[in-house]
Length: 139
Ligand SMILES: [Ca+2]
Ligand SMILES: [Ca+2]
Image (spheres, rainbow, N blue to C red):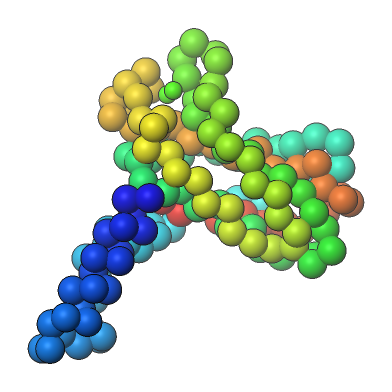
């Protein structure tokens, strides 16, 4: 949410400033920072867990690639907690390769790394199994 808001501000400022050029680099707040790519297989009857990623808040993007356009599956996002009861952040249903974006600002806590949310995804419950899926993570 914050990132989206901030990038609208940047766009607005660019349009209002006559000397600004569109070639100028942005300052990073409205951009996705790529963290990692994982080879996560899709299964019909279960979900597979990703690695854990630290986020300071804002939006978190799970981008799936190399998935057939007729395969529907879920992407669930969680925040890991030391007490074992991880927070369920949300679920997106995708068909084919796509983006699942979650707002994680409410899940920043101090049980793992102070001031960070320990984020991981589970992906699966697919129409059919697929071992070629690759999943990219952005903060
Ligand atoms: Ca935590
Ligand atoms: Ca938590």
